[in-house]
Length: 342
Image 1: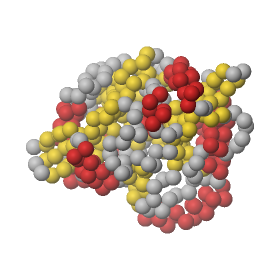
Image 2 (image 1 turned 45 degrees about the horizontal axis):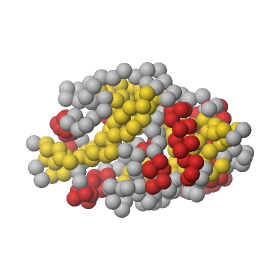
Image 3 (image 1 turned 135 degrees about the vertical axis):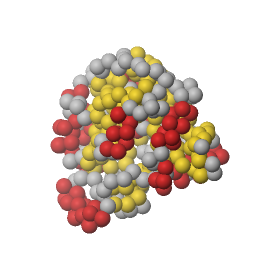
Image 4 (image 1 turned 180 degrees about the vertical axis):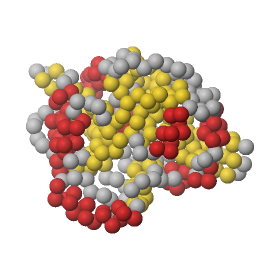
């Protein structure tokens, strides 16, 4: 019988083992982990409810509900993100593991508006969750996101950004909230989280007024993306690709076992979205890591332009509304969650 329990600080080793022994498969095998400990005070943008699934004494999987404050249908609301789903290979075809997990999640203080992201190329998960199965919630496709990894060497100085001092953070919080009302799933900023996470806050001003903001966030001290390995084809191509990437100023492929050296350009907003490509290029000047990662809606008017200008490596995901405890409506606002929080 599958039992699902709260994961606490006593279960850190189990949580890390499930994260690190169940890499995301593909030409790149990626592990997303949380060293040195799963529960980090530096990730203070909401509440987390991790859970472990067991079959008797056998650890078979994990998941997590993260509750954030954010924007839904033009109003500030509680949002639930379903993530960190890992199931050991032997149990991946056992529907009862997923059913037990969702039954557990429904007992939590779950917001009406829940969502998740699934890699575009994860066809197995998409087929299972999109078709509707008894015991599983309905997944409603909302939009696609493009995660862009950009080499710092692509930076351009246009004099657009200034580093915002801590005493002006409240202005940024207010500005980001104003811009977020036109988006679905944009998170709400809070002063405590901004002060604790050690992010670099950027602001762009016209006539003394804030017209754009963004935050560079190097999360490697508490959350890492590790290249666990490459497919046989990619192992052969990696030296050639890295030589090409060096000549064309693109992100290089790290060696197996290395942490991806990235900072997120997070909480990005502008009163005029056509300025975003210029702002993204200049943000690279302030980036302290070889790679800057930014998430943009795939259908956004600037996404293809940014990819073309920067030679970005692109990872695509699909965003779904999940009818976990309710069947809420989603209006036509652009879907734009913050990938640094996923």
